[in-house]
Amino acid sequence: MNDVIVAGGGPAGSAAALLLARAGVDVRIVERARFPRRKVCGEYLNGGAVAALARLGVLDAVRKRAAPLQGVRLVASGAPPVVLPFSEPALACAREDLDGILLDAALAAGATLERARVEDVIVTGGRCTGLAVRGDDGALVPRAARVVLGADGAGSLVARKLGLTRGSAGRGRYAIGGHYTGFGTMDGYVEMYAGGGAYFALNPLNAERANVMVVVPRTRLARWAADVDAGVGGAAAALGDGVRSFAAATRLGQRVSIGPLEHRVRRTAVDGALLIGDAAGFLDPFTGQGVFLALTGAEHAAAAVLAVFGGAPERAAFGAYARWREVDFERRTRLARGVSLLIEAPPLARRAALRLARRPDLGARLIDALAGAVPPPRAFGIALLGRLLA
Image 1 (cartoon, rainbow, N blue to C red):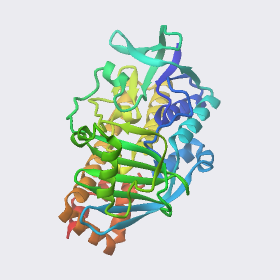
Image 2: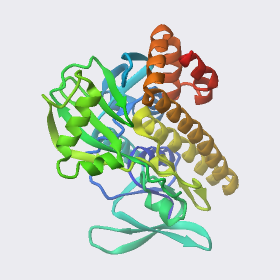
Image 3: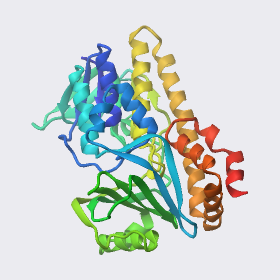
Image 4: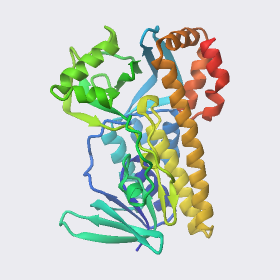
């Protein structure tokens, strides 16, 4: 039996395993993918994510594989462009590099890795007591543990098997894109072109390569079934408004599709188990908070587990984690919805863009909230909304 078994070796799972292993906990990570793996979501590391990587002791390794980012250029339909500089250092890093660095650090700290697919959770007497995993030999093997961490992403099997998944509203958007060359210089700025419930995002990974995604509602994606590339290209050209398009771009590797971009859970803690990262709830990636939430959630979850192993009552420690996650996630959901409101309604977008051009301090507050530098309520509330639309 392990002390802790972690389903998933992405940023949340590896970060939690790293912290626990450093504290002397016997940790097993179950991950079916072999690294390096191509995963083009979450390649923007905001200031909060950068700070978390520093706390984990891996920032120097990440910087060697990353590119610095200066800010965001936002173009909402019918509105003038807005430049929002970052007040804290931010990075662009390919997930194949970031995930590998975090997993290697966890293994170096003493965690063990099992290449297998999680197929079920083990529940004994109403308590989660392990995972059933299937390795390359095809055998289904039980892995017992004192604590299970579900870090298996949006659509988490652990959440589903524990009955924690909340029903989908069916309105999730889909992201289609990948890594491209040929978009030219972006001067270290993330570019976002938004309108009509869709957006076109470009994140410069280096001078030659960019992470480029078009995010659209499910209904629009269904209309592209006959020719996805043509649909993506047309949407990008319309959103890019003559500034950006795929016309001169060349894709590097396979096209990637991700979605639906929604995942909510009823709870993040049950007896014997915690959900972390996207498994605990998924925010629309437009606001770029995914890796930040994965890393900070891993920190809080690891602290809760260590408290239990130190003698604290499990329900109290796990309950504290669940309350933190619920409150923080709800605040960030409202923040994301507020941003969407401003960019999706052209009259509001125009007004907000003009206001931000005159009052860069308001944009700085918004960026700081998205980056985790300040709590969302201090950055985006009725008062700030009023100032942006005044």
